[in-house]
Structures are given as C-alpha cells and as structure tokens.
Image (cartoon, rainbow, N blue to C red; front, side):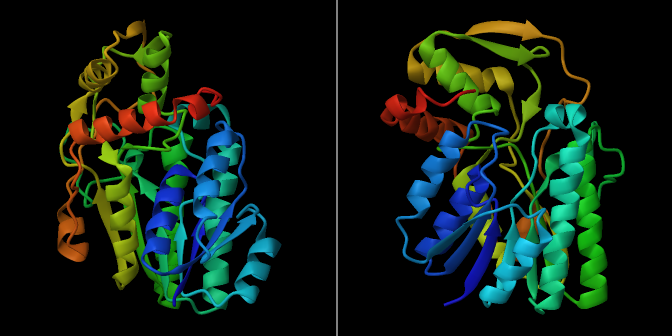
Amino acid sequence: MQKIFVTGSAGFIGWATCRLLLNQGFTVIGIDNVNDYYDPKIKELRLQDLRKFQNFIFYKADIENFEILKNIFKTHKIDAVINLAARAGVRASVENPWGYLDTNVKGTINLLECIKEHEIKTFVLASTSSVYGDTERMPFKVSDATDKPLAPYPASKKAAELFCYSYHYLYDINTIIPRYFTVYGPFGRPDMSIFRFIKKIDSGEPITVYGDGKQKRDFTFVEDIAEATVRCLNLDGYKILNLGNDRPVELIYVINLIEELLQKKAKIQWQPRHPADIYATWADISEAKKYIGWSPKISIEEGIQITVDWFKKNRSLLQEIKI
C-alpha cells in the first residue's frame, strides 16, 4: 500500500484529492496548518470527513517549518508527494506578498529538500492559471509565456515551478505541475465567488461583482481536478498540464444558474474591476489528454446543480461559515 504525503489536506482541493486517494486504497499522510485565511470551520468539516478513513494520518503543522517536515519524512516511508498547500487569492496577495513567498516558495523548497534527502521519485506541485497573466490569446497553452504575473500570488507559484525544474534537473525527481483553472464544488472555499454567491443569494444578501459580469472563467469541478491530480502520480520527467473545463463561461451566467436553482434573485452590487484580475481564462488541456488521458466529466450546469444541492443539504452547518 503506497503512502502519499498530501500537503494542504484540509483545503478544498486537498480534501477532494485525499478522499480519492483513500478510496483507492492509498495511505494518506496529510498536513495542514488550518490557518484562518478563510473560516477554518469548513477546514475542520473537511478533516472530519477524512478522519472516517483508517488509512488517513494527519499532522496539524506548517510546511514552512522545515524541522517538522524532516521529522515526518523520517517517520514515514513516503512514496510520493502532492503539494496542495498554498496561500491562494490574487487580491489578498497584493496586500500581503510576504505570506505568499513563505508558503508558496519557501514551503515548496522545504518539501523538495526532504524529497531529495529521502530519494522520493515523484512530486506533484499544484499551480494556477493565474501564471498566464492577462493575455488575449485563448485558450491558454502550456507553451505560452508565463513571465508577466499580475500579482504576488501567481508570481510565487511561478517561482515554485522554477525551483521544481531545478530539483528535477539536479536530482532526477519526476515533477508534474498541474495548473488549476477556477475550481469549485461541494466544501468549496468560502472566499471564492461560487460559494459566496450561493450563500448570499440564498440568504437575500447582496453579492459583489467586480467589473461588468462578462468576465469569463474556465470553472472546473473539484472531483475532476482531484482525479487528474491523482493520475499525475503515474508520470515521469518534468511535465506541466492545464486542468480546466475547456469551456469558459461568463460570471453572470453562473449567477443566473444559481438564481434558477435557489429560485431567488441576486441583489448585485457592482464594483470596478480589480487591476490584478484576469479578464478571461480558458485551458488548453492537450497535455492532460495526452499524458494522463484526462478530460473533465462535469459541465458547469451539472456542477452548479451538485454544489447548490450540497449547500441546501448542509444549510444549517454552513450558516455559521463566515465569508
């Protein structure tokens, strides 16, 4: 039974990826500092779900702490590492760039040093569509330039990608970098648009929309993302993949879907577009199809239906979640 070390295991994508690995029979060693970047109550709910599995081991700790990481790697014979721990959020990174440097860059280097020391062969680093910056060329291709990030968050993820290449080159570590495109679904992040929209429209509160609502996102369902992330463990060499739904939709279209499913009208407060926001994203998923045989299964319409149904089922629990 292989042991997979998953960082950020109380996070949204971390939870979904751990759950899939556990269901497939892997032993998962999870680590998360359960910080308060967004309401930690939802992180605790995710951990409660994962603790139902006997093959889940959890450490409440930070990947910025090199000594703790070294002890974990000494304690367990780890077969592969999936790094999903990150400071996320484009706008927040403009306010606090240092936190993004510490977690996304220093934390990644700490993991790479442990991987090197213990001769672990495979490392999966979660990256982001934000590294492409604001380009009119669509869809985003892995071969596109990524040297003009618009905020510290994508800059830190690009730096982490580059450190990964160095360690791959020097120590022959199989390094796979999935770049995620706007992930959503049950147990989603309360700081992200879809969770906020559902909760606020349901309670009759106004929602904030930056720009004109016609900005497009390649919204991708979390279970599709988890499946692709786990498949990355089978790859060799150094590879970058785009993981997106390959079907960008306007933000206002998603709001309309939520309105229909909740049978409530959104009260929209319009705000100017933030300069660090990309106007549109669209993933070219050619590499994902070629290397891991992956295409997304869940359409935006089906995914929003699943997410709204989950919200309704857990409404009483989610009322306490701050957004």
